[in-house]
Length: 167
Image (tube, one colour):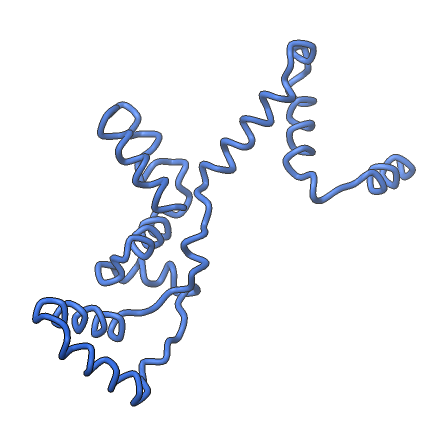
């Protein structure tokens, strides 16, 4: 998800350079640019090009992999190599050696939502709340409505009743 959004934003920046300040990988909306850059590289299969700071940023997503192969798999691979052409066998060997030397990361890193999703959701909710009938709301009241709506999972009717009784 994050890599897809980064690719879309980069293409928008190419078409409309004025959006670079808001949509670039180093924009103020990106809270952890190093982490985002590392996650995008991992999602794009560019693990080998991670810098030391990027590796440190996604260290928690690193998983251990078993590099030992069983004899049966090795025999099957040798049989396949006899049937393959030279280029395919070289590329397959390179891919296999690349997997062993580079770190493996959790599939969870592919599912990371971009920060912009939360912002878009908040703005959509604000549009729903700020109807023409509520246009005269004080900013503090509007802020309270938006806070309660955004954090709806933290409260329910029972909690509102308890707070009301304490007042």
